[in-house]
Length: 333
Image 1: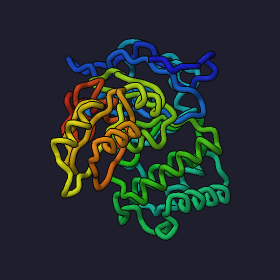
Image 2 (image 1 turned 30 degrees about the vertical axis):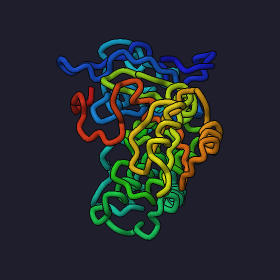
Image 3 (image 1 turned 45 degrees about the vertical axis):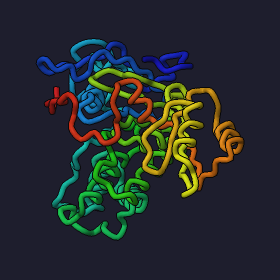
């Protein structure tokens, strides 16, 4: 599904048409069309096994597509993979740093391999260690790091140099809230200050909503919805009004009033209705006043990306623990 407002190929960091990757009978990626503008954050949101990682690996030239085309920064992933690899950086789901080196040594080594002078490499290492909250652990061996610390170091290693395009595969899985927030801040900074395009996969609704300029929702290898988070929610999701009754509130009367404005929804707090366009929160309040019905509290719940996923797939993304379709662990092409 092509992004809106894209005029020229030069404006695109990623463009795919009918992209597909198969593993036996499993269609891990099944005809994906995407357009990702340069200098933006694009999030691919979906449950485990949906095809997120396979899509990313094809774009990063770790896997060869079985059908369709993909261009990354203007280079075809099949015809010119070396040009793609020299222009992008990838952080996968598992740490790839050297456990027998300290955090600082890992970053300095990468800087030296990338052509930095020793002084410049050490300076860049210090900047990254500080940005990811690892300065106090800079001199510790990575084998003694916690899982969250290793993850932060791994992501720091992927941006020793500033790539035009950064691939992040479920970057915050397993991170504590503080580490997750630090990573989000760094992604925002890279886009804002460095003009980096970020292509990230995630199964976290909040992460996609917070970071992505545009989101592609993927299920069973297909993009089922694509657009800005706000536009997707406005198109599919409908707000819910929830009332917390007082001891004097008549539940039947409250349900009758709410039923005028949409479909009643399950609620542990009281009575809730998903609005269907017959009125908004103000109309609900006026109806309660007219009927002399009092409530302890009234809440308006905005639609979420999970509402979009539910509308497009018939199930909720929140709470999914098992992949609906196994996504095979591919070997590099």
